[in-house]
Every structure is written in structure tokens, then in C-alpha cells.
Length: 192
Image (cartoon, rainbow, N blue to C red; front, top):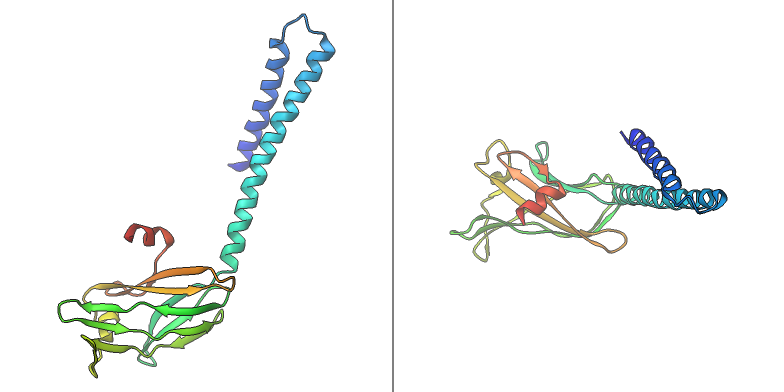
């Protein structure tokens, strides 16, 4: 589609130049009309080139951003019977904090996740989740609410961290009955 669009733009520039040549008053010398038409075509081509170059630059910037960003997710490791925080992106995440997950607001039951100083690309870390009822730590584990096979609803888990350039990032993972899913930026924006 992009190549076809380029041919259309080139044809439009050519047509505009030809029309400008014939629409100029006939009292102007032929050389001057040709010069004006060529300069006008050059101006249109430079504008078009600038727009296309800007599109390429934005695409390259996006590609660099994606290839140098950490991507964190949480899943349940059945062999260890624990949750795991994994960096599936291409860069190191630093100052990682996972927001508490409220299981029951009425009973004030929540799950608190530990924070980590960093997690390199491709690494994972088993999570030791602390269970709270009110402000007290309880021995009973409420982790099962986040495991797909036994959950009865979905929970959003927010993971906050910084990239190596100290830019703050926030990703959301949906855990529960629908299974673990890293939400896209569009899905995250819909929920805000």
C-alpha cells in the first residue's frame, strides 16, 4: 500500500506542476514559467520528503523504544507452587514494585508483593507473597485467588519500575479466572 501511495503522491506533484505551468499568465516568458514550475515541483517534493522522513524517524524511535524496554509479567509456576516475576523484555528493569492486590475489601484481605532492586532481561524471580487481613499478617494463603484453575474472578496487578534511563514505567497483568495476561497499553488506558 505504501508504494502505491508514493506513486499517487508523485503523480499529484507532477500534475500540480503541469497545471501551474499552464495556469500562469501567457504574458510571462516561457523560461520564467518553466523556472517557476520546476521550483514549485522542488518545493512540493521537499515537503513530501520531509513528511516521509519524519514518519520513518518516528517508526525508528518506536522500534528502539520497544527493543530497549523491559517487559515484566507475573505468572504462576506450578512446579514451585509460587508466583514468578519475569522480565520478558530486552532491557533491565530497576526499582521494581508491585502494588498490593486487594482480594476482599470488606474483610480487608490483601496480598503484598516484595520489591526488587533490579531484574535483568530474560531473568525471573520467585515471589514471596505476604497475606494480610487488616494490618496483620496471616498464615493462611490467599494466593489461590490469582491462580487460573481455582480463581473465581480476575484481578489487576500493577507493576511499577524504572528503565535504565530512569524513566518510570507501569505495566498491568491480569491474573485470575482468565489466566495470566500482560495488558496492552490500550487496555491499560481503558481501565484508567
